[in-house]
Length: 85
Image 1 (cartoon, helix red, strand yellow):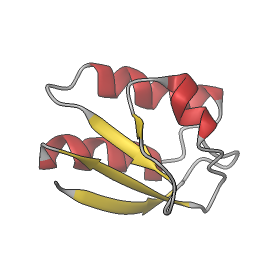
Image 2 (cartoon, one colour; image 1 turned 60 degrees about the horizontal axis):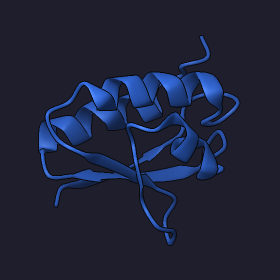
Image 3 (cartoon, one colour; image 1 turned 45 degrees about the horizontal axis):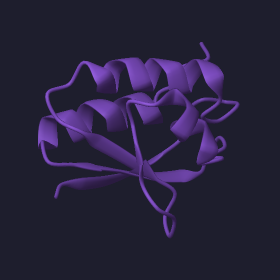
Image 4 (tube, helix red, strand yellow; image 1 turned 90 degrees about the horizontal axis):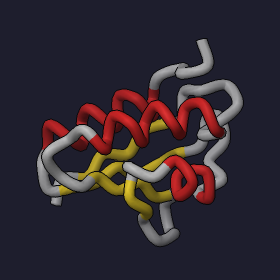
C-alpha cells in the first residue's frame, strides 16, 4: 500500500476548513485514502469529522496511505498545502 508522510501545511492544523476540503477531494477519488498521525489508527480521508479527530496541528506529520498511488499523492498535496489561505 503506497504511503507518504507529509507535514500539515495549514497554519491552524487540520480543523474544519482544511478537513472539509480534503474530505471533499477524497470523496471524489476512485479509491479509499487514509490519514493517520504516526503511531495511531488511520481514518478514512473522505470524512471531515474523522480527519479532525486526528488532532493534527500545523507542522505535525501525517501519514497518507491507500491503494492508488496517484490518489495518495493528491491527498498528501492537500494535507501539505496551506488551505487557510
